[in-house]
Length: 176
Image (cartoon, rainbow, N blue to C red):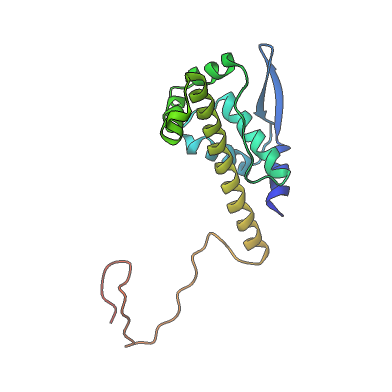
């Protein structure tokens, strides 16, 4: 299965629901573990609590990857109110804005431009997390199809008694 196909497959386990007159994304009941693992990974392995923005960015990334766009150009929200709502929704989001200032410096001549670039930075980060997860997942699937067990370390080669090696074993003891 290709990355594009796997992205479309993962996307099929999301549903849009209405909450207080807005549409948000959630996982469907019975979602497989690998999709839940993808969502967890996209939340920086649990460092960020689940939130509506992250779910929306995951869905956006899966849609783009499914369409073959692995390096898309993201855009920030158009309305200032939406940008400020994004920033206020999680204290960690200020760090995306700090990163935008470091990367663009004097080009960002207003607070709105700084916040917009911070939001784009988060979208890019989520996209990369999703893309890397899918690449690893597809590589693992291919290895399994080829008869390899990706979770088992390769067997060690039998050594001839008395043969000397230059390296040391994992326990730090010299080989004899």
